[in-house]
Image 1: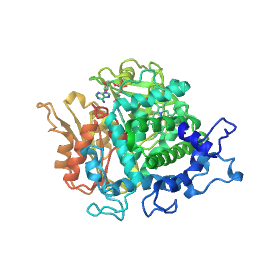
Image 2 (image 1 turned 45 degrees about the vertical axis):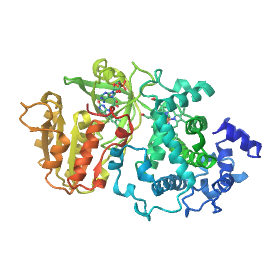
Image 3 (image 1 turned 60 degrees about the vertical axis):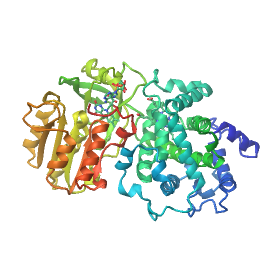
Image 4 (image 1 turned 120 degrees about the vertical axis):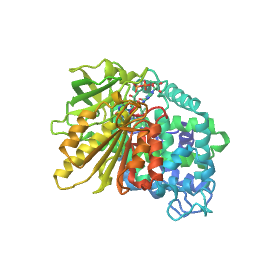
Length: 514
Ligand SMILES: Cc1cc2nc3c(=O)[nH]c(=O)nc-3n(C[C@H](O)[C@H](O)[C@H](O)COP(=O)(O)OP(=O)(O)OC[C@H]3O[C@@H](n4cnc5c(N)ncnc54)[C@H](O)[C@@H]3O)c2cc1C
Ligand code: HEM
């Protein structure tokens, strides 16, 4: 994974062989970690100790023996152990005494953290752990340096990656301008750990499956890891201590193992991507289109999830779109797309796609699903095409009501002007069919509109029928942030408010429902 260090360790006596597939090294690196952790952290504690917050080496220092050597390195690890590594990094970050001052996430992100995320078990904000791990502190410092470098760090990362491994360039989109830091930002998100370790592991599992569509091979994780460490070393300077490096390596290794195993397991069950025929294309004005597509093979998903779409016009360019219907017996999938000015994929889908055309779909992603609601009433707050995933959730809830699970669904649907409330007719049909569905339409910039006026999130927080609801929020990232804030203020517990994490992980201006 890390040529410089890897080579040094190999010179120190680590295994240097390539396996039959030509894969070198992550094994070598992983095997050499336990001794290095003991040497570098200086805690004098056993490598699998959690007492100091030190990250345990993979498999608790369990060095693979020759008879296990035929298994790939990621098969020698377990889901639990990988989650434990992520959990220790996350808890360690939260245990740092100066956590509030140095948090790299913007304040709004901190507000969005669930209560359990802002206070690790067994610790309190007033009494930070005295045994904060220097390696964990170094993760924070190096990450802060790289975050401060912004686009320069992302540019360095990709330049380093493509100079050393030019064959990887063709996996990426031809133009890597606006979006070039997506992969890099996601790697950073692992240490930001906005979600619980289990949620992060579930995210990585989905991401690993989804990476099959890029033709990513296990051996490439080593190359990407090397570029990541080179970037950290370059931009973090003296902060990139050996302990910091170990911590990053272990975190990246755990994340990679989760992704690779998920991709391998998935390959027996599902294709890497789904060619799909556009069977219907309805234009709704204001640059909005509703597409109905028929995947070649069944594509499994849960209501509330999104998938990525590639159009023939822009090969290798994928964009996320929410699925706008519950899983249907005929396998058809609906997407609501709003063309953004100058946008590659959205304009291709809205203005240059017709029935009979083919698009390519990636696997379903996202954890904003109905499962968390149990039997509680639903409060759905949608801005623009943010309606899409919430319509899927509402349809599923209506269906479940037929099976005896009766719930009230309070849907607040907002846009700037009446004409942009493009799906009202369908929603009225839903409310006619199911008396428990209550629709409130809201405009923010249309005084002549007869419905509610204002910001949809604030209107919902003010007029929601009761607080004991499970809330689902989708729309532009700024609208989602603001809505979560006002709902929390209005008394809905943070753990009962759901949104798609991916929206907020993207650049601020990107999001559904503009
Ligand atoms: C989880 C998730 C679900 C999403 N679901 C939907 C959905 O159901 N329907 C939908 O229409 N979109 C949805 N999006 C947004 C979608 O993924 C794309 O970002 C959007 O369609 C723009 O892509 P593009 O290729 O056309 O624009 P790009 O080529 O990526 O961008 C072109 C320019 O437009 C700017 N831009 C990009 N997105 C926006 C935006 N939303 N508003 C304003 N400016 C923007 C860029 O910064 C850039 O300057 C979702 C995004 C996420 C993360
Ligand atoms: C722990 C390791 C990794 C993480 C966390 C990660 C994360 C991500 C994320 C979040 C995205 C954006 C997905 C989207 O918007 O649809 C992405 C895109 C991508 N990743 Fe990875 N990735 C990892 C490893 C790799 C490796 C090893 C490769 C192989 C070269 C790779 C190749 C790609 C490609 C080609 C894209 C598409 C980029 C684009 O469309 O701009 N990733 N990755």
